Length: 518
Image 1 (cartoon, rainbow, N blue to C red):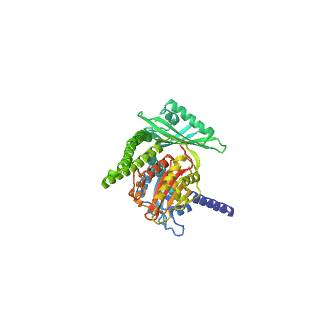
Image 2: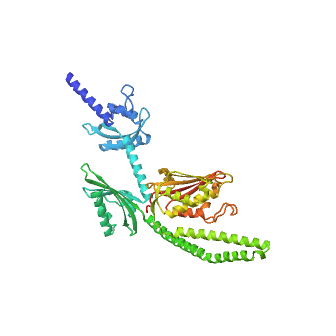
Image 3: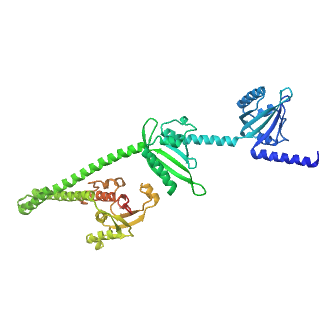
């Protein structure tokens, strides 16, 4: 052999070795009579040996690295293949010299002598560990997706615009009342899907897909489907267009979600809301009529009480005068209560329009309406920058007036009342915590005072009708002021909350949207 031929053979060996390493395979031969083997470099790499350290190669040595169960089955398959003189393929588990677990695929054929007897086995081993793991992961993922689709009543589909062929997930079959095994390869899923739609729904679906192909990328629509057993389901369909490099629509990806139960819940909720609104309306009408009609007998009671006091006071005993004064005081409390109840009804009943209003102007108007306590320095009020929001001016004036009056009324003896009014934007995190619309601006307006405060346990109770935490003798009132405040914030799609430390003061927080979005 010439030097040139030797060099050429060596280059071919290097090329073969590089190919085996790149494609993770190895070749080998097995002499049936002697039980000896010869391995390529790729086989040594797969098995974790090198030519210098490897012991004598034999069939038994090789099979000692194969999982016992697989080795037994391998021998059985090979024996049958030798008997029938046919090639075979087998995938099995193998442990390398470094104790690494690998998955190997073997393809083997046989060399026969002149009498047709098998003398050699020639094989190629391919390391498919990563491929097997990827296939396992893919099957696991598919199983998870299938379980998720079944749990969420969701199906996924894809439409190829060039061929007008549709592919489905198992969830689509389940939505329509079929089993995944009912699928047929030759089935036209586009037509099959249309069979489960009414004609007008077919037209709407075609128009929706054509619309996003021409003018957009995504669409969401609600539709009705008829299942295999004739059940009508309400579904929500989401579609997204994928475009090629030229900007043409190539595929449409979609999801179908069963919203039948959600629709039923919405209908049930709508009925309950209507019943609640009707009940609230009846209660509001009753409160308005009852309180309005109570004023006439109350005026007579007050009038005759005043006449009795003016004309017959000298004829009454001390005990009689005491009873009369108590009666007059109770009538006055009743008058205040009825007026507040009527005011509460007006806030609920009145249908008024919203307008953009600078809340700083409203607060200044409220301060101007207060008595001389603020003007003469008996109360200190600090007002920060206020936002402009869409609001009902009269209701905002009443809201701020009630809170200001509360702060002045529940002062600590011997301490100058200090009231700080401030505002700030709500952060996204704060809106999420309060379950408000994240895409809409909200403001927090705070009234903080240094008054007597209250226990935190009462922070919700104080907004209920007729709730009082203190006696009327010490702090007069009907217990309606804060209930009216909450009703006003409800009317403005806002919130009102209170926090306090007894003996240190209270803070009332009003949350208002910048705009009244429907």
